[in-house]
Image (cartoon, rainbow, N blue to C red):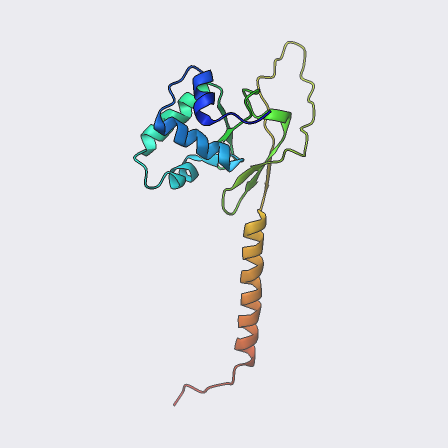
Length: 165
């Protein structure tokens, strides 16, 4: 089934499809991964949506079950659109959080383990967060490492210059 447009999803949730709501929901649908408030703000550059309006829209979209939020160990909430048939992050999968840049992605190919809780307890939600360094940051770190090794070689092989004249 094809993904509905942002306007259609808002109308189905009995919300007005305002320009700002459509814009924010489009950003989340196109991202395909959880985005922080700041990441969304960056994508809204040039629009008239300020941070308070964005916060209100995100809260409204969450209450309407059009998006869900995931909190990283850095305390930052990230927001993600999910498919039309689900009111929460689908599939019971963990999330990966880059400790360098803060990028979060859904690990949809991994499954979260079932946890048996004691009788009388009720699970309301679960979250597994995998911490590490994303591919982009790993590549940057490798490039810096290579540049530093090259720099060290240049320093070691540079001719000695006596500055005590």
